[in-house]
Amino acid sequence: MNLQSIYGVPSQAGFGSAVFEDHIKPGTDLESMARHYYQHFVGKLWEKYGESAWMSTWKQVYVRPNGLQPDIVAELRAIADPLAVQYVPILLLTDSDDMSRAQEALAAVFNYPQITDLRLYAIGDGAAMSGLLLAGSRKTGETTILVSLLD
Image (cartoon, rainbow, N blue to C red; front, side, top):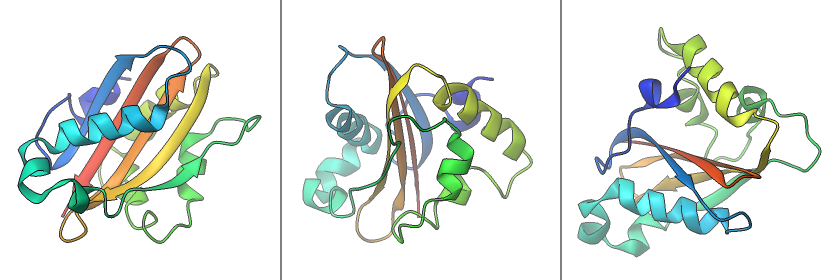
């Protein structure tokens, strides 16, 4: 199951969702990579509204604890943070015909046993746009970042 076929290919659309894949040096700070791809996804809107607007809601809302048996769907459903809880159903595509495909694709990528760092961030411009960014990195440096931003 290909995550990009469900959530979209890398883009600078600044709306909807996109999946970015990168190979980073093991030990690289995942948050800085997540911020880089967030800015890339927002594209020209980042400059138009400014970094302060786009980072106003940036907040880490989940980190997978060491030793936890990976189950990304259950982990996302357990999110209670008020900035993120309303967007989890969108990320899981619970209101679409593709829900099971989406959840299988999320599990295929983010339940992988070699994921050593998994984080979820609330994102948005502090006004109309809000969403989530899910980032996971493997021991090998393979990194997947899923950005979902809606109004």
